[in-house]
Image 1 (spheres, protein in one colour):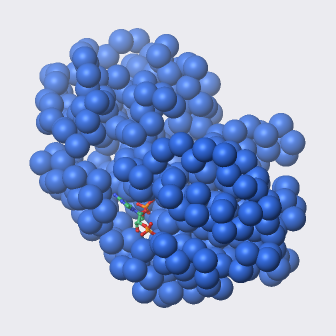
Image 2: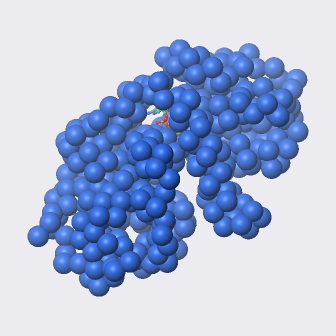
Length: 360
Ligand SMILES: NC(=O)c1ccc[n+]([C@@H]2O[C@H](COP(=O)([O-])OP(=O)(O)OC[C@H]3O[C@@H](n4cnc5c(N)ncnc54)[C@H](OP(=O)(O)O)[C@@H]3O)[C@@H](O)[C@H]2O)c1
């Protein structure tokens, strides 16, 4: 019998984790067993845990009692199959648990993807339930497994925000301020805006002192501003704010500084996961939450199913190539090392130039 090695997180205190080894039940008809050989670890995974109850991320791979399993973007191979359409040897990219193995129930099987149709996932956003069958994809994508785990889920979001801003004519903004710009989602967006010669908006990145050098080296910001120095931003220009930090002090400070010139305030992430809170009434546009799957659904209706994801994949491929020399992949081997990396991530001890890839 196969055992799965897993890292469980206390849903009431995400600093507490425990290693779990549990036997995998004999496979039921229609299911497949996959061995997950790699997944990425970024601030995005911390946000899945922080919002696990409010948004529902704990529901993808349920654990027991007060414990949850943080989802991760990874690659896996089918090692046992009771589903004729998805044979042993199939290679997958998708949304897996922090574990060495997982059981999936493929449905709606296509040459290049299937959906996990297990009962408890049915009401969850489709983007997380789809698994790419990568052997049906172009070879260059098959050769980008690390990038797909580490960068694509973030850069695809960057693309969807970029598209959302263009779709809304930037709400009239002439500059875009990006909070926590050294995050992959943040600098991915900065790159896409900066590289689009049709756009005239300037790009202003906000970050911490230790990460300025990294952001400078990417060359994608017209201005870099340190936290607490927000008054350096020109407040006479209509501005769109895209926030990856979730830092309520920063939101308040930028809104108060820009006043009515804050024409859009888009809350994307919470990399500063301990600095959240209610911003209260603020001058300028009302902050609203950006949920990438929502923009995908909108574009699927307008452009046809799958078109937005294809464009996001193309944009991610381009930016991944551009930053290849700026990100050093560091491998984390085993569940104990994973628990340590999780703590380091929570404590902001992973530099933005380090890309953590995990193998259990
Ligand atoms: N809404 C959506 O659909 C969606 C989709 C994708 C990602 N996101 C969100 O975007 C955010 C960024 O994710 P990512 O994976 O791109 O991040 P990442 O690359 O891991 O970000 C690293 C950066 O985040 C900041 N940071 C990380 N941990 C921190 C901590 N403990 N305390 C303070 N700052 C910390 C630092 O930047 P600075 O010094 O520059 O602040 C650090 O350089 C996450 O909150 C993620 O959930 C949202």
